[in-house]
Length: 404
Ligand code: 7TS
Image 1 (tube, protein in one colour):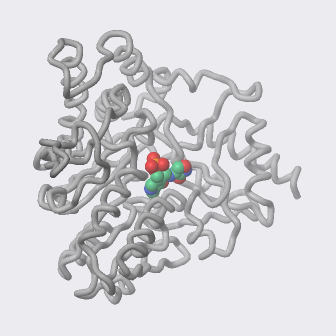
Image 2 (tube, helix red, strand yellow):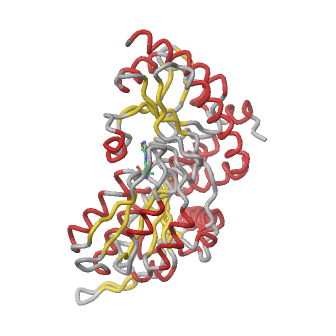
Image 3 (cartoon, helix red, strand yellow):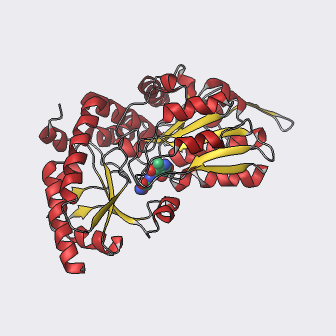
């Protein structure tokens, strides 16, 4: 059960006002708000144990290293990874995807095929296009229907012994669709292809089990699940991580450096060159603890109720059309009202204290599919309330009247 008042009290920003109105924060798919325990974790690090990690014999450095490494263990358990060194701490989803996409340069050849879906964020498209430019590999795209569901028969037809890699999101940021990733992974494995799942939008709502999924790579950003920005995770199966070359060279990712030859550190450090966001990494652990304490089953159940309530309520507005009506979806509602430009709606409701995202949501192929410039996107989190849905509804009715 979600104790909404208790939860809201954990988030200082939810007590603030914007443009003279109580903040109604419905842009959670862009980034989540941070509970006090996460903010405290950052302050505590800088106030009590600030020092560099993995290098000092001195006490502070060891405390900081232990705290940072604890996050790796928390993430290992959270994702049910087999080994803690299969968890690479990164700067975020975009960074994690680029590590894998760059690493595959030496593993692909001209004419190899790699498969993406229509409903990806640009950060799960562009790094792979760059990989194709480097290698001569060919990018194939899984189409979707108007509900925003992938066409799995078409996926079957794209797969062949030429397919080397498949990369799709677990949940679409613009539509909320939860994709059938187990089926996608199993089918890719049948033709010997590896699979990367972009979990940027799934991890705030559910707890993935990488071993049960048998996924090769799974990536996410801390900032979407109550953690800080500039931190993320790359889970990779040990075999795959050993096959990939390092992404960046620098300190801490080496065994030995001479001018003749450098040897690389073992996992996970091979992929962790340079001083990382230490405070952020530690706070990521605090965020994972916080969310697990609330419980992902409770989060999913409450957000489903919010989604159903908000969907019914918003559809009462004449001319409002929702993009993304998949049977299986998370708490994201992307919509337009008649011909009104999404930016105009977003600007008016901002004056009323409501934060939503407007535009293409870094998913231009989805907008091209629907032949629209963009949408208004309200994305709900476990700390949102039914009253906030009502406030959104009233604000949209007002915006529609003003703009029609
Ligand atoms: N993949 C998906 C599915 C995303 O939604 C995002 C960010 C990313 C990758 C990139 O994550 P980053 O943390 O590396 O930036 N999505 C959004 C969004 O929907 N609105 O703002 C950012």
